[in-house]
Image (tube, rainbow, N blue to C red; front, side):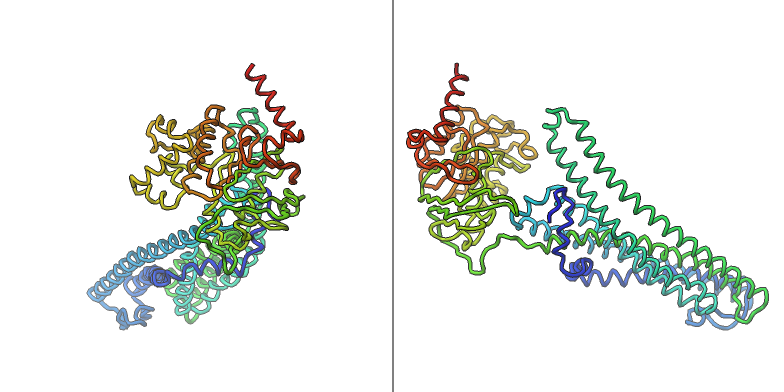
Length: 630
């Protein structure tokens, strides 16, 4: 079931396979870049292990000068014979300095290469994943958007995908760091003293097992955190979007309490996870402290007692230099496990969303007509949202091409829902909707929707210019408008003039290049509606739906728009939903719905003569208008 609070918990149900494996699949196109980055990262870590070996060699062969040649002599980077005399010691020191300089050069170059290659690969994966997720989300059916809130969707597209990029950007390199550092140090320490190396490396499997347990402990917490932050985002977005309503009704305190409740939930989940994390990391530090003390005691006693194979002064120093480097990445394992669990929780939501299939799709062999006349038939149509009561019940209606049909009825009667079945925003529960005699379920979705335009009561305008919002109605016109094509601008102006929008647009500060703001907030409701009408007309649809499209304009403007629309829709099939019955009085046919069923149908004159619900509503509105006029 969908989460009404926007938590998106239900999308995990459509997850296919392990989410982190799916994430790594996105790295496949960039494997050369990733492979070079990994190789460079290993070189960086190995180069970091060289300076302590040089320090140990300098202490043993230059300062103390024992017979033991050391590791560098074994790999033939230094001479194995005893170093005697100032000149030989100076030459050895110069060799050590040269090796150190080379190690730092290699480290600097490979560090740059690894970070650039791996981080740029992470950015490319993030880009591809966000593009795919957004595109997939756009193609999901309308029932998904009905059941899921925008805040949750934004959380997936932004927070979750950004978290995956951060995981690839940092924790993948940390994994290389652990493998290279621990592996390299283990080999070096073992060559100096297997006994002390065993003590030093003993915590490694313990930390590995503990990290696995840590994942088990923390996993439920981070799932709850992701859901809590999605709910918080949804609440914040609702409140910011409804700022005008909150101000109008002075509901600051009420909304503050609701945000505080969501914020407290998020706080509680984070604190609970923090308690587990801090206890885990404290245990790791205690364990590494115990090992440090053991190495100090055992190694020191071997040296005092003269045990065979006891460490030299330089080797002893090397052990402690490496111990610090050994446990730093090992302690990081716990943090990486923490980050991994966060990333896994995000990946479950992202790839669960990608695994969600649209419920409304084109058939395998879709019908793609060369053109649509616009004949629309509703044949015993019933529809409900999910498991709720039907919103449309047994509706049968035959609308010949070129006919204008007005729909009237109380709010919630099913008028808008009925017409959303024509472009297949939703699928019928029973019955069928046919266009030109062909069931809409047989149409290619894109071909079907290209022939249908909808103007809603509260039209959505994109953050852009007036011209861009009108040109959005036609794919070619939009592309041409973005190229500043004069012919496209002429088409935009023609559509705006038809919708009685040209006059007010020319009065705007920059005319058609005026930015309308987010959701068209810089324009009035009537201006937004007229731009939406122009946008719909530009598409030259065979079927057009006006859902209270003139509700926010004054009577004079409505009359002007109506005159233009009468000319523009005379060769189209038009559905006009209106509470203001004067808008549909001249329709070829008026249909009255109640509780999802057709209760009256006929012309304006016929319905008045029948003296039914329509006549009662018409008389009530006429009386109200006379009172206003008086």
